[in-house]
Length: 157
Image 1 (tube, helix red, strand yellow):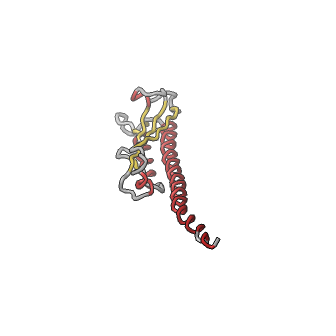
Image 2: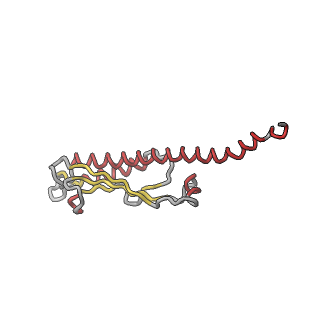
Image 3: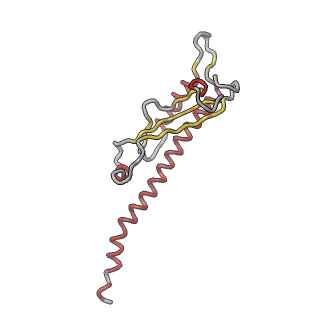
């Protein structure tokens, strides 16, 4: 029995790094899910606001109506820059939040507003998943979309 006194310590030393790696992976996946929820909320709110406000409103110059979708997209792009995301594993592309009427592009569902945000994998972040990407492939990009029924006229404008 005297020869097995250090066995527990050796087993613990061998298993501790594996356990910590799995634990860090679980925690980081939770952070990524929180980031996804933040981005999804921004896109959903942009679509909801665009559906309620409508595409154009009258201005002082009737030949130049105000494009509400552009104003809403700019507003939510600013919110996206200020919002606290934890991982920074995926960053928005240059276009940012895009708000369009679905009939403009012959998309489905009809009579709705479409908000979309494309995110790209960043290589500048020194993170757990960038190290892990040598062993498991991460998608290079993904997009978050949301459709809302156009409340202003019952049809896309």
